[in-house]
Length: 426
Image (cartoon, rainbow, N blue to C red):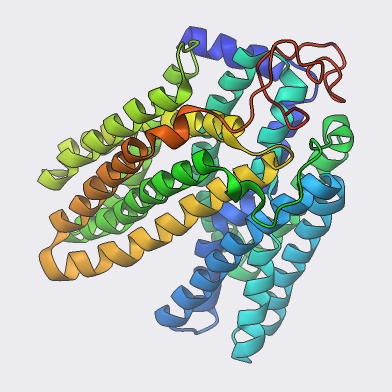
């Protein structure tokens, strides 16, 4: 792990890198905590669990729609013109929710929809910036792994922050503070030099945008099922905790899952990987699926916690590898949109997983809901195997003699390796 820490420290010492990573994580707090913050606020206002779930669902659906749309806008108009205004409008939507409460319902739903729809695509934007900030391909790939690990930290710390704000202040204050922090995070990113000067490569006009890439479509199909697996585990873990008479068990299981992802992401980022990332992704998704299978055994709390940690080990590496594949297969000039589609597909899959796992618990018990995760993991692998031809050759690759590599607007030192694509390359 020392080599991992040293590699990540090398990345964070690069100009602007730490600021961009922290700014993006803070800017994404509203997205990572939105559903739980909305549910807590709705219950505090006297709303039912059904209403709380419906509002959280509307937020998630609006977010899924908005991410690729705003990602395309970023590719067309640049980051500052889209990211910061979107963050402000999203925060105003949440402020409207706090102001109106749960009555009248149409206005409540509209406020939540606006907040979700205008959530800025900071996650995709950061991955589009890494090549211009870090230059060398190996450093960018390590940054993708670090990014995946950081996301796990954010999704662990975010709900804890909401809980703390609710305990110290109120559910309304939690919503307002989280979204104010989100605006500040977006502001920190867009005023940085890499964000201000980044420009997407010229793109061919096409209404499908990034979705015209067969390889990207194959990846999205696979990661829908990866998201479904993770979403089903959140429901199955809660059912397991109820079976064992303590809600705290749920926290232990999810913390173990996150710890496993942190360890796996750290080890994955510690070395350089040879060979095509598409082939490596198939291996990682296969191992991820295998890791979910033992959860069906539902043993005692201690061994179950250990199994949860093991099941998370290959999650961050699979996500980090998927980032590389996205960059290789995104059509020219669509890199932010392509990354945003991955975020959206994963989120929709997770929502589907929660919807499927609930009935599985009621019909066949907790073990069946964990079986949903295992089945979804293998479905993700089958998609990758069935689409090997589409994933074999990236849609766009820069040739070693392609002078666009040397003249990239943000590659002032000519540091980008030949054959490595950025947002400015074909």
